[in-house]
Length: 341
Ligand SMILES: [Mg+2]
Image 1 (cartoon, protein in one colour):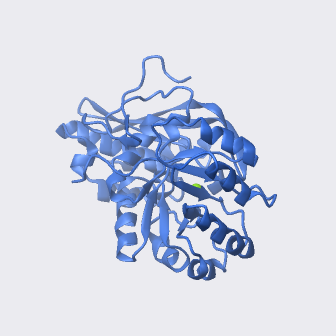
Image 2 (tube, rainbow, N blue to C red):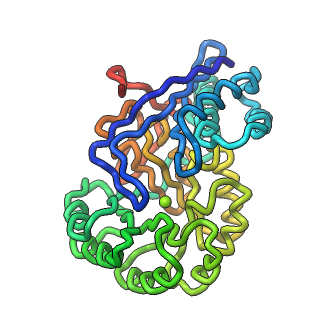
Image 3 (cartoon, rainbow, N blue to C red):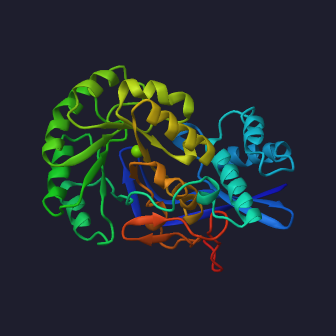
């Protein structure tokens, strides 16, 4: 297999703010694996929050090229060889996606069928990024009516997080989910969560810092399900998450790809945990990999490509609030001719 990669910039339709950062664009890597005249593609968005960089991902991919071998179906063996190289989960995820895309194209089947899964899943949430309560309510009012769930980014560090939810609840009856991105301590959480429950919030994502020793206390006392994201990266984290949450948030950029994500979802079920699948700011190429396994999850937050000014990799069908993977072979997305540069 021959591996090539190139940089691209994804431009957001509007600036995206969470508790720790604001983004207007994201630099990503597009990976292509060629084998027997067929190409598979994948996308990496290295996560600076986890110490990853685009430069580092490029260096990793150059090293990884020599470890892939010549059998794209040998996913387990390739995964073991890549595991020898530390970190770079986003780049590993791009390789995993490209391998799945390639395998699907070689046998003429969409990836979700190769995995024995159904084409579908719960509706994706639409993210209302962090702002003042009135501003968030105004944005919630103008959401595309096809969305059937809203995810509110909280963690304003100004005592107004419950007000943010109340303001949004005042303008919509849609199910609400909140993501605090690690910005509460346990006392703030125990005070806020009952109020959020009264406002009809479905669950609270990552209220505490990753590894916060009060996690199990919050889990036991919270009237709402707690889902953990920054606490849960790969399969080895899932067991510990059962002590401090009711559910895990899987993202391919953390897990290193579809294969590990499926293992995580199965382990979570064995431990009685809920499963949410989330995304970073990604084009349709990244989202296409995630939505192949949407049917394994209770909640999906796969709006990454819909936040872009223009999706450079169209092919996902956004139907009745659900991000449906294509019925074409592989990941089923193709680079738009105009490109995204
Ligand atoms: Mg999150």
